[in-house]
Length: 190
Image (cartoon, rainbow, N blue to C red; front, side, top):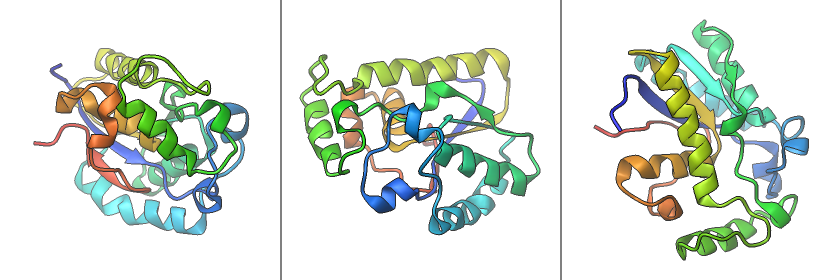
């Protein structure tokens, strides 16, 4: 897919859920609780020089508290318009693992790597995540031209989105380098 905009991806800064070691993927809790830690806010502030250098013009973010706080810190410090809340960028739903230890991420990722199309434990499939993330790109391609756009979202969502530009299937997302909390990377590497 040829893009008319330049897209950059940012994983939210360190969150209270990251520190607590729990999975928070249900909107009922994630949209209102488990925001950024002090370290997470520092990570966002540390990303400002990169965002300035990239000449970010628009910021879109998930509707989860941790991504909204990340995006708001960025736009406030870069004197940009308010971030646009995009629910399609929200965290992958981890089903029955939601609210439990983050050690279950490995269980989900091992299942992902099998490439099966079904869901276990009510976890949102990589194909489902991929479709909604690609819908965001398609919508932005319709409404923006020649802009530098930052998408602030969650690790799995961003990794799964990136697979399209690395010629990988969505279930192969863990083959890509991890995006750290507070890290900004281009969607397409030159």
